[in-house]
Structures are given as structure tokens and as C-alpha cells.
Image (cartoon, rainbow, N blue to C red; front, top):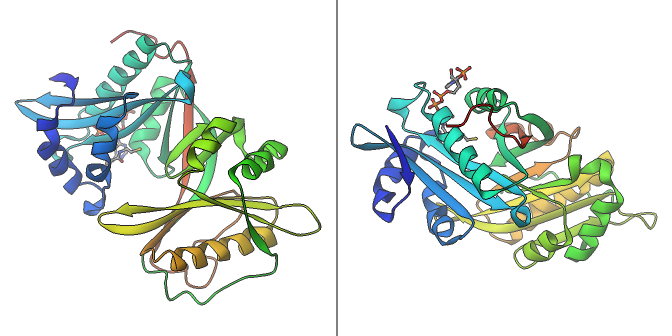
Length: 293
Ligand SMILES: CC(C)(COP(=O)(O)OP(=O)(O)OC[C@H]1O[C@@H](n2cnc3c(N)ncnc32)[C@H](O)[C@@H]1OP(=O)(O)O)[C@@H](O)C(=O)NCCC(=O)NCCS
């Protein structure tokens, strides 16, 4: 077995692995160009008996402070042989060599293998957010306008979150399967792609949402994050997100939102055929591994 940097000629093997991941709904092949173009991305493949059996990426984010471990994939035929664990160790060694302060990764609550790997490294859970993914949402009639929602700037969004640190566990914000340190820079960076909204009532915002339209498998998906301080504000801004998704002609909605609110299986139209889970982010500060790889 050998781990080496990804080469463009590995693309077909990666597509083959993705084809058998998450029922063929893996979006990794669509992100590959972006990953290869990113100078802070370190893509690896694992070769075993002359074939590519695994793939993973280390992305150095937060101004060089965080090694973000992502896109771990092991070919279905080669799972449960310790390959993901070996790849993780390699990524972590690389992160250590690059001098990052900490490594982080995100997974869903149900992903037992990733949780076990996180546990083995000695990572701790730093945040949780609920998430739902709904494909055919356009027939949803439910709407909630109990609290008015207005658009706002990325700067206002940043100020809202810094004013309510309890909303963002450990100063980390989540969007689209990613977690970043809450900084002005990250908000001005995503400000180009995202739209921002807040609720309006008694002079104080009680919820914030930001979202963008992303193409997944040639179809537009509306991806948003909601941070809310109370239930009416949560449902009003969620309703606004569903409406925005329709206006944006999105074919599906992926939404990350604060606990303890419930959207999937709770509101009419999201009760059935909705994938829902909890996103969990794990972190470990240096030293990353007890024994070097
Ligand atoms: C998750 C995935 C990468 C794991 O790869 P793998 O090579 O089978 O994992 P490993 O063999 O290194 O196993 C790591 C640990 O998870 C456990 N494990 C592996 N698959 C498991 C499963 N399906 N259910 C429960 N535990 C599992 C192993 O027993 C091992 O536990 P241990 O450390 O206590 O011994 C692989 O299943 C995969 O590609 N899944 C689809 C993509 C995915 O979910 N990626 C992660 C995104 S966050």
C-alpha cells in the first residue's frame, strides 16, 4: 500500500469510487477542479495492488491555523481494512509538518467510522448543527411570516454573530459542510457568493440566515445556514429560505441550522423524503498523533 499526491490521471478512479458512495450522490467529482486549483489543498490517494482504493484531502484554512480534513473516500470493496485510518494519519502528519495549530473535521452523527477515527486521534466534539436536505421541496405550501425578514450585509451578519457568541460554539461558523473560524475576513470572502438575511422585530434581530446557489450534479441546490435565538424567528427565516430557494429556481435545499429547533420531520412538506441529520465538528490541537506515521 502506498499513499501519494493526487494526479489528474487519478480522476477516473476517483469517479469510480464516488459512483458507489452515498448511492451515487457523491458531489466530490464536481468539486475536484476547485480542489486541484486551491494552493492550500493537499490531495492524496492510496494505491493498493495497483489500483486507487482511497482518496482524501487536507485543506489549510483559517489563515493557516486549521488543517481541515475532508473528502475521505474508500472504495466500497476495500472498506473496514483500516485504510481510512491510515489515510487520516497521513493527512495529520502533513498538517503537523505544515505547522497548523489544530486539525478539524466534520461528519454526520450517524457516520460511525469517522467518529471512531476522530475518537482514536483524541479529537473532541466542538459543535453540532442540525441539517436537512430536501430534493423535491417545491410543493411545500407551509409558510410562516410571524417575524419579518429583511436582507442584510455580510458585515451586519458578522456583527450579529459576534454579538451572540452562544450561537456559534467555539467561535466556529458552519456553511455547506464546512466550518471556519468566525472572522471578518471569512464573511467578506463569502459575501461575494452568499446572500444574507436577518429577522426584524422590536429593533433587534433574533435570527440570521445566509445562503447561496450551488450547482450539484448539473442542478442548482440552495445551500443555507440559519442561526436563531428563538422559535418564531427560526421558522420565519426558514420559511424565507424555502421561498428564496424557489425564487432561485433551485431543485433542492440543503440547510444547516441551530439546535434545538426542528425543521425536518416537523413542518409540513418536510415530514417525508427528507434526509436529516446532525453535523458534528471535531477538533484536536497539537500534538496530533501520539506516534509518528
Ligand atoms: C467512512 C469511510 C471513509 C471509512 O473507511 P474504512 O477504510 O472502511 O475505515 P477504517 O477501516 O479505517 O475504519 C475506521 C474505524 O471505523 C470502523 N468502521 C468502519 N466502517 C464502519 C461501519 N460501516 N460502521 C461502523 N464502524 C465502522 C472500523 O471498525 C474502525 O474502528 P476502530 O478504529 O474502532 O477499529 C468509508 O466507509 C467511506 O468511504 N464511506 C463513504 C464516504 C464517507 O462517509 N466519508 C466520510 C465523510 S465524513
